[in-house]
Amino acid sequence: KKEELKHLSLKKTTITVKEKHGQKNTLSFDKVYNSMIKDPGSTNEGIFHDHGAKIIDNLLSGSNAAVIVHGGNVTGKSYTLLGKHGEDGVLPRIVDSLLKEAKKREKRSKDDTKYHMGFNMYKVNDAGILNI
Image 1 (tube, one colour):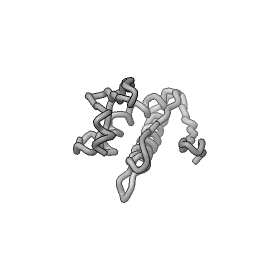
Image 2 (cartoon, one colour):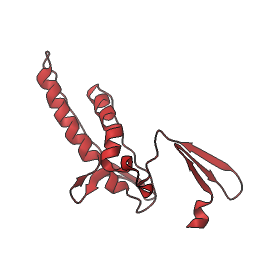
Image 3 (cartoon, rainbow, N blue to C red):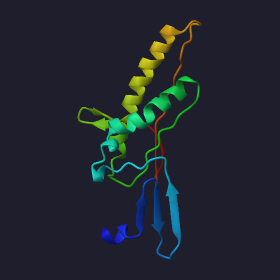
Image 4 (cartoon, helix red, strand yellow):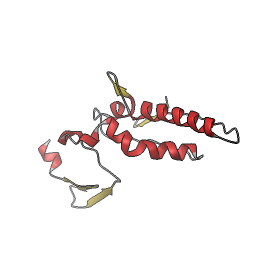
């Protein structure tokens, strides 16, 4: 594992990967979550806190949204999205908050605003795309 990591550098929101032939690929992110260093923001609650309200506001304004989780096998993608053992993942938190906020806005609406929502979930991997 140490051999693999010496070709990877992480600086705040940028990851640089040095390929075997010397080429460097740099990827930039809004935020990188790293539970290995016990970052309190890297919990499901922290991730929801950082992104949930923005997603909910956009959805209730009529925009579409996508939550994408990427990583290798057994790195916590399903745990982050769905949760486990009584701790909700990001998606249940978003759905719960979205429904509560939609209900509040409908009650406050002066023009009988109603929200109609749909939800799709896909798993994408080497085998193809599966509509869950």
